[in-house]
Amino acid sequence: MNAVVSAFPLWKRLMDIVLSGVGLIVLFPLFLAIAAIIKIASPGPAFLRQERIGRHGNPFFLWKFRTMRTGADAGPHQAHLKNLIATNAPMVKLDTKSDPRVFSFGRILRRSCMDELPQLINVFTGEMSLVGPRPCLTYEAQQYQGWQKRRFDAMPGLTGLWQVSGKNKTTFTEMIGLDITYAEGVSLLLDLKILLKTIPVIVADAMGDAASGKQSLEGFHRNALRKDA
Image 1 (cartoon, helix red, strand yellow):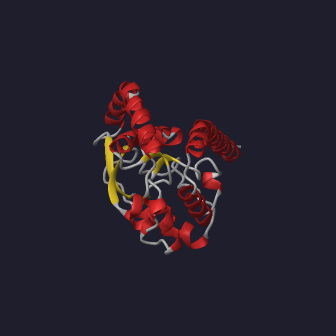
Image 2 (spheres, one colour):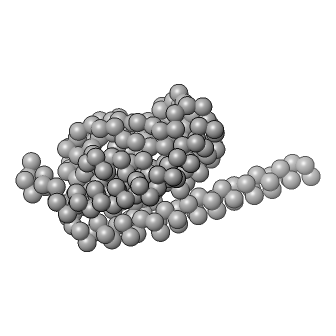
Image 3 (tube, one colour):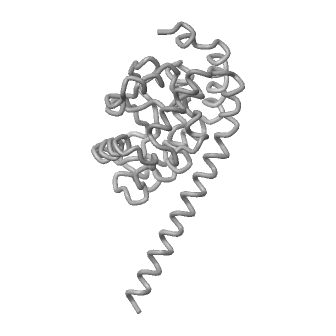
């Protein structure tokens, strides 16, 4: 592998350690509150350790707040992902509003992306970076073509170029292209730009999901009124 691609910039690791360390300290009370609510809302552990594929294709265990009921079947997500890859359709998520596997508070965590906050632990320990391609699941990596594996040249991140460049509006191929573009052009300026864009993107996505949910609820009420008439 190319030595330039393989090298991990010192500035990037230092930024990861400092910002993730500060984040873990500052957000610790929030972590405790979220964990307590999860325990009340759904029987089972508050945290989830899930195997993902990291830099150079090496597996690691990613930390998340649990948003699904314990024992949830991964089959629907695998089928959905396989279809997205095969059809190269926009990378829309499964409809969590009607997914019985996700409990109510879990939907809030997903919409706000707060379920991803424990990955600051992965960043601090060096398994992830603040910025980079999202670490994929094992069964997703197994479907990658040779050229698509070039996204593994970069350390996986909490946020990345794909997240601030359309995300669910892009196709699988476009997502891979953005990840490879980032892997080939890592720089301090690019990381700072992506970090600054991330929160506005999350807020806009959350507001869009809320508006969509409100429209769906209004539509349900209208249909109910028609039936009663």
